[in-house]
Length: 246
Length: 96
Image (cartoon, rainbow over all chains, first blue to last red; front, side, top):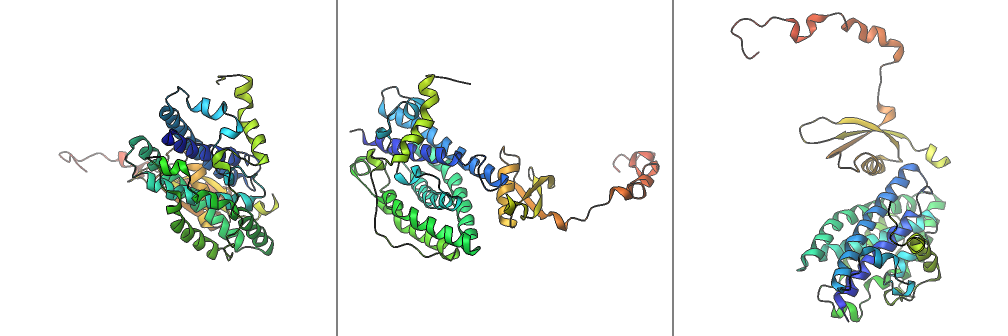
């Protein structure tokens, strides 16, 4: 197994699917200004995905570029966590996803920016700044909604409760993270992540959900039902018109 | 979009680089100053236009009225001696 290739491919898949979900907010956000903000964040994620997928293709050494990896793999060949593929739900649900995933990514990229592998360190160093903003933006909304009206509090609380089980997969190691020489051990990110998230939840007058059910499977290609539709939408143009450009 | 219409309007000023002043870039809606800064960052500095942003509640801006335009601005138009170029430089004064 080419563990480094698989590891970088997963990181790229996380970013790609996060971007695809976020861009579905385009023209649907609660305000024009927020629409642009979410599209910006999606573009940051897409930029990270392109760099990481390109790198994964090079590590694989079979001539697959970013497009081949994004558009020509089957559903079960994607290694993103389930959290990023969950349907957007209401705005609070998307904010909770963005907060939990962004905080994880930011800590991960901080570690990877010190990587001995220069390409990965470069990609991570740029992404640290981008994801720091994603976290701040999501935290702002979490606090605003959590510490807002009765209705916004109720929705933010249920969003946090519903997304919470899916955060465990972010910190679950396996044979790929064990074997990859360039990998950051996902378990090691958890304490700092918990601290950051706790702080935001406290500010938002929300309680931290209990740990319990911890669905996994994304890393090994066992995705949720919604994922098939997402991949269909992502790939339909390329599959109908291979290599299309504009 | 009813909740949006309740968000106050903010005027955005962006400084392009050190040494220049903040210039008015436009306006946007936001619930508070922090959110206004976020939105300003996304709307007005996406292409590397700025190093600093100010946001000001639009309600806090006092503006001259178009009705007062003549009284405010016309008297300045015919006083050429207010321009530095009106005066002759004294002989021998190279740096004034």
